[in-house]
Length: 446
Image (cartoon, rainbow, N blue to C red; front, side):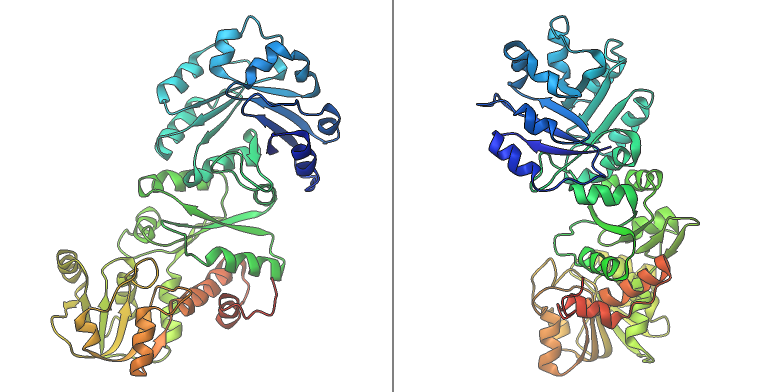
């Protein structure tokens, strides 16, 4: 159930907010009173809105039940804090079928006490876990499965917990204009989640990711009934994120730093990175980064390759050039030694001539930095740079100064996106078209 949430400040604010637009797919309206307002929400304005009407009373606002009890008459449900309900239950003159009992707490124990409280089991419940992780959320959710409850884990990193409600198991609070709580989806997103297939990117951080912009434009341009979302989750939450994603029917996911090996552990062998999974129907996994590099490098068969870094993208680089003499360097020598021993790449100890340099570190995207001396003093025919940014990366500047062939992170991103779209939807969208979107040269198409 999709409920539009409005934080009430005055009736002009309410009238203005409701004029933003009403969609027939929105199931109702929540007016939130976080404190005692100087004026009550105008009953006529509220009545003009279609669908379920919820009045949420938080902080000092429940005292309105004592001074202005008639305010409840204009609403289908009154959202009342559990603690207030417990201390005033004998004085609350609201019919049980009209009450929504809510609790916002960091305590798993307090939630379990509510679950065992027989006096609230007949009511609709809203439970918000303010701290903890997805494991805590998942386990508690199983414990409340026999109750009529909407259950969220608070915060932007826990948007996935709101899917249960959107898919028909409770009330989802969405926003127009500004959020009334962390982790909310916009009304537009919530409607698409409810009606469309959902795809997304799992990573941390995602502040500079361009993937959502790509897919939003491609979905719109080709009339694909899908939505693409960013899921910036904590590493400890990965396994439970996947459990929830599968339960709520997310159709497909991409994985970026630091989750490509976690995705491999979950869906493949735990050794070879995975950045693509199709969850709809039979599970299908791929490394479209690998396919992109092979596509972009063409028929070249480099003899010597230098890889900068030792993470998942470095492993992908090893996989891309199985017949080359491979060298590796990195910022952490101990990790480089482990990588060298595990994947058979030699540690480069001094400048030399190489056919290809591959930058698989975040330098240039999330981290600024200068080139290691061993790179700046070496000779290369081509450079492949996984990171991308609005400005030129240090590797791109280096390539231009030396007149070296350069394959940018945006080219890799566009090419792997082309493969992703092909495998998810059976649609051929060229890397060139996607690169034009990335470069802002798509002639206004969206």
